[in-house]
Image 1 (cartoon, rainbow, N blue to C red):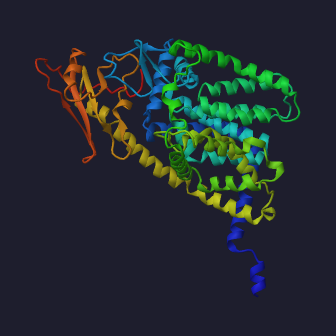
Image 2: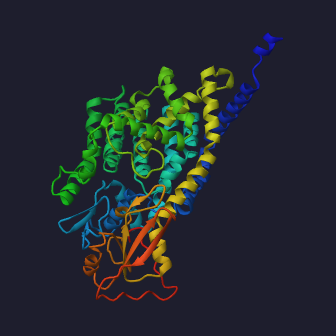
Length: 524
């Protein structure tokens, strides 16, 4: 009897086998009806991401980076690369917006702001661009997985990514990662073609990678290497392919030189130099790098199906030869290793944002290995365990999404409090000085909240509190505006707004009831 019991599959194994069979059958059906799935699925995904942007993230650029991108986009949409610097500049300082020689400009690469600016020019609201790109991303992942491995791998890779808060929240944000990831997926898709002999193939791959590089310098260049190596696998003339690949990226290289010349005075000096270069190999990088790497791993586990990362590690060591795609398999590990020497956690983020683009490239590899068996009977014990762990992790994602949604929304509500207080007080023609940091759990510096658009013409302007002694001096430099001080109280977890009393200067009148002007949390 004991032998008979041990020979019979356990109830758990039977359940897993049935679930596996159901999953692969569903994936095969979805791929067979992929046109209908795209027609229904793309708008559904975009609407879901729209909803996250509007009702969870409250359409708030929840990072100084995001606001700087919007600042650059609005500037470009008006046909400029910079704006006149506000006066006094020290009062209106903002992280990642450079003020020098009478000019103010965003310090980030121009690739993503250019897309936002184009959207604004054709009438798209800025908040709609990333959700649309998010829907496109899922299609590109599906297509790339099908081209590199199998139709089933493509479907299930898209499903694994689409069900992850990591993807959903980044696609709902104003970060550049979604666009950069879509460009790199497109380049990988082109490089994965069987027929790579037409000249347009390496040219298009180079063009997409060039745009990715001027969107996120390090990420674009780093992820370009495994994509380029896969493009150059046997079957093409390497010298010709390299020349055409470089030609495709050349326009972006020339545009970058001109952009840097216009803004920094030198074609060889990047606008990000002051805020990024010094963070490589900074003092204590060994211990700090280990600490930062640990937090990156924890964020992966919190924002993606946790077993997915473990399965990735397992299959890196055990994937069969026919399912290996060279350096593409290793791009996430290599990215993590390279960033070990970069002393920056990523600030406000939804998951490990510096790994986002590499994550998109490796999920098809995991899906191809996880679902390579055509039937449950072909599963090895390791495959069955990996599948069960990933399935359980995916089942937890709705709970993870809800937890992240509650946390992020509360953080945003706190960070929007200065604007809410101003709106509630009905202020007009005022200067609001923000003192210290705003928020309790994840406070934000005043320098990330002085959001005044690109014209500094709103009825209420926000500045950094220069301290008690200099407040009245600052007010004198901006005549005709009543001055208020905003301070966040960590004990009461609320902000207070009070007038700044200065001698011999009358306060401007408050607006009549109901005449409050909403604060400008985005450039306009």
